[in-house]
Image (cartoon, rainbow over all chains, first blue to last red; front, side, top):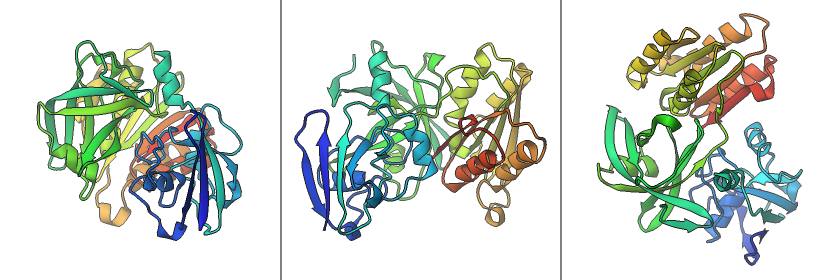
Length: 123
Length: 243
């Protein structure tokens, strides 16, 4: 079983999900088996304003553990991440980062803000 | 005022004021917000519409096809996708129905008139973000050449053609060209648009100082991105959105 630990900068309690990547998709948004897919499919909300279509950065997560166990980011994801606030070397879009290994252990932090929220707050 | 905030997002509630059928599978909905609601966006952005299906709420993105300074209702334009929950839901909406959405979202935007020759290219309903971008560019102090290449499988899938043709007559720096993909079966969607841009802006000269805004569904827009970046255009000069 793969393990996904999610921590929230907003202060919500962390969650740990154990799941089998081979059973993906767990719901209908994002890449099958992506962090977004796993979270939503286990009842944990993660914002995804574009429906998980890699067209915004609202599902930005920072990977703390297991970065190299995730699918490689494509150029489209990198182009968007370049404009995400709080970008780190281990940033990924939750809708695109797929957990493929049955024994992967992944830890991610969900940042408090997204670029869209910053736009909204500045109005 | 917006009615509620969830996770610090403002939820807007709009009324469908008008529905326009462009063809059998393409519609525009015009969304009217309450008079005291403040909603602004940058040309190219989308809204995230709440779709309720069987007691479950999903969000689906729809690009705003109208211009921020129109002061009219927000327009979203979309195709009926067989089996597509979002588009089927929206196709069932009637004038007077309410839609809830958050936003605006998206980074495929044009905030100010371009200073260099700028090429816009879109396929079918993916013209939605390009339309307000062009309006923003043409309404501002812009002398840079602006060129729109608009592709479709056939002419019935082209939207706003008269509007673009009229704009091309009014603005000497703007040209508009349609690129019909017929026969789509043999060339694949977007192939002729790809070949047209390749001919003009890759093989046609050595200039690499243009900017591009590309929008489409699926692989064709990524093929265009790769074509232009690999030809020497700067990465940031090639902006795109792939749905």
